Image (cartoon, rainbow, N blue to C red; front, side, top):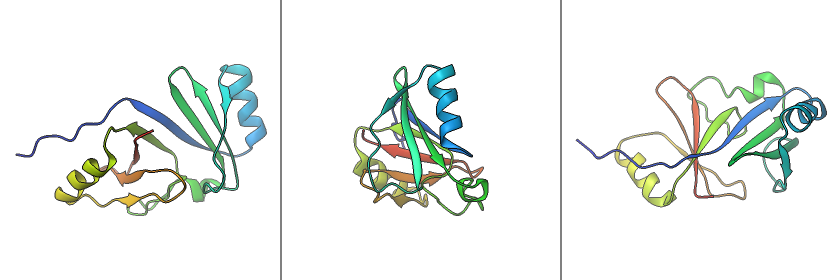
Length: 128
């Protein structure tokens, strides 16, 4: 039996929102999240990155059908997902490959790998 891969804490959660301004009023004004810089060139026309404690919250304004990322076999990087921190992205990718896990290496200005769990939930792994 192979040794389990090691992932760290939750780095961020990503949500699709209908209206960015309304979402920001809630996340900043109600929940007290604070705004972070968001890199240019990310998928999704409009969005915001926020900080809540030690976890980031990434918002992308997109129609619901685009952001769900379904069918589950399709990997859409801006879909709703959770991201885990990893110390060594290359080692994780090698381990996923050895286990036959389908993956997408992100090329969106950030080092990242996306996979689907057996139920179709989208997971991201990032060294940041």
